[in-house]
Image 1 (tube, rainbow over the protein chains, first blue to last red):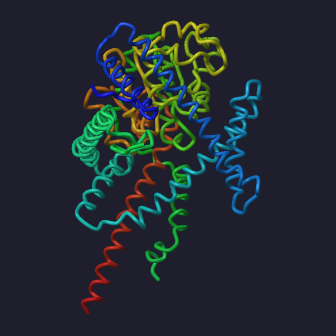
Image 2: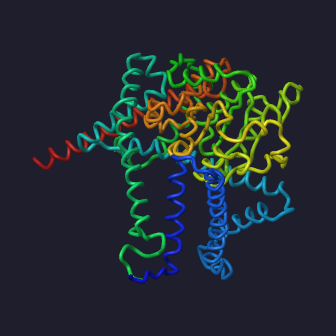
Length: 216
Length: 282
């Protein structure tokens, strides 16, 4: 019998296989103790996600820290990013830190910046409608027709002008567009099954840092 | 150089007209009639059919970037839930959502009801903090609420809140109205096992309008709120005129402007192409 050697690199794959099979079965069949175990695993995933955020922050410091300390040119925006993140991380995670400061930073700086950014994007969308959304073939024509009717739904002024527009726009969204979306969903679902099967068989190893058939 | 060529080089006039169009309906309201769509009336009808004391969960994944489009619809439902004497669990799966959770409690009138002594926090409604983990969090919250959150946004223990004694999973919940700027697929992947006991409604961006029919036609949703337009429809149905109806005039004129830009841009490009072709032939 051939001796099977389990390498350290394969451990995440083995964990993935066991957990995936369990979660898959637990989704469809009631197993004694299954909900409790799947709950524990889900909470573990949430916990890992939070630790990944901390790891991401440390990585941010590792990448930008030296440049900030040396005060390299054009690094001021990295400084703002890194120090802003550090301030939020500090006030959010240190027990006993003043929540007023954290809330103020979040509500008045971060939230405001995000809102302003999206408002700015809205203006560029309108500019893009005039300057870049150009019909160059029949596919483009159908796209633009669907787009126009999609916008009609949100503009009562056009429906008031011509009532059948609402029915036509609803039909386009409800039938051809919905069919296309359903196609996307089905293909994505099949793709996910395919990817999961490849991972279960050990063919998909990109998350381990190696590709299929690659020797460590 | 014609105006159209100028607009190709300088986008500022496009921005300026947009800005004017946003403010114009405030000065001169159009008050156009809003047609009610069945996906909105279905949602309204479902909330109307709930009995006083039924539990409604309202995940509020609304950030500053999407507040204009998602919040009016979300707020209209929160007001309707209060008016129907239902119990509400409000929370967020988005790090930016907690501000809007707190704002909803005030704007929808829940805080005022507490001040008047008509509602009691912890008995009639509970506000839970941000739950990290995205899809894993959706699954876990729906499956075992108490293992996912320990405290509410004010730091009270979940065990100390009487309402939470009745909410251990989505099986204890009659209606879930979730507002999110992301696609609803991850939510529904995890929540579909509960559609037998719970009605779902998605408060969505207009961008996802046609994709929403996938879940509506499959019977996974009761209905959906299509951005500001859906909010205006819901406000009419529920009798709470609010931000949705206020934004409708802006929505009309700006969408009209968008359509005009789209057609004009293509007409100008077509004219330039035919002119260039005729010059080559000549």
